[in-house]
Image (cartoon, rainbow, N blue to C red; front, side):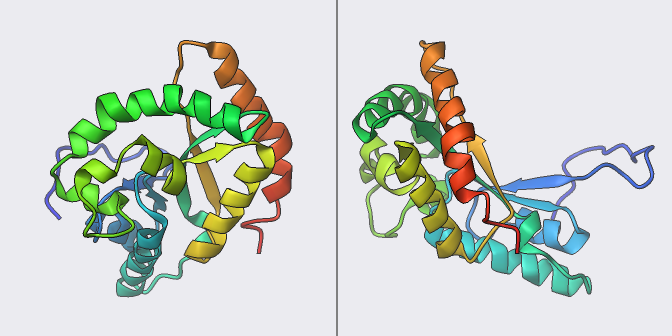
Length: 198
C-alpha cells in the first residue's frame, strides 16, 4: 500500500485506538486493519453479501502478522431511519436519506468500481441502484420492530460484528431526525442489545 502522506507518531502510550474505514471490494485498508490490530470499519454502502469478504480480509491480515482478531471489534456502518410506522419511516427516509444519496453518493459512485460493492447482483445496471433499492437492501428503515429485525438479520448474515455505526443525515426537519434517533436508542437498541456480546 502506498503511503498517503505524513503521519505523526502518537505521543500517548499506548497510542489511541485507530480505526480504518473501508468501502471497496477487496479492500487493502481492511486487511491492513487486521494486520496492524486496528479497528476494522466497513462502509454503509457495502452490500451484506460482500461484508463477509471484508471480515475474511481482516482475518487474513491478522494471520499474516500472527495476530488474533475478535469480531466484537468489527464495526459496520448503516444508514438508519426509524419512525412510528413503516410507511412513515419510508416516506421520511426517502426525503432525508434519499436526498443525500441522489445528490452525493450515487453520482460519485456511478460508473465506478465502488458501485459494485453496493450491488447484490453484479449484473445489475448502475441505474438500478436507486433509492428504492437502497431502502430495500442497504438502509435500515422502518418502525422499531422492523429496524430491530433488520439489524438482527444483518448480524446473522455476516456472522456477527461488534458495533453498528448508525449513519444519519441532517434533514430540513430536525424533529424527524431527533425522533428517529430517540426511537433507535429507546426502542430498537434494547431489542438488539444481546448482539455482539458473545
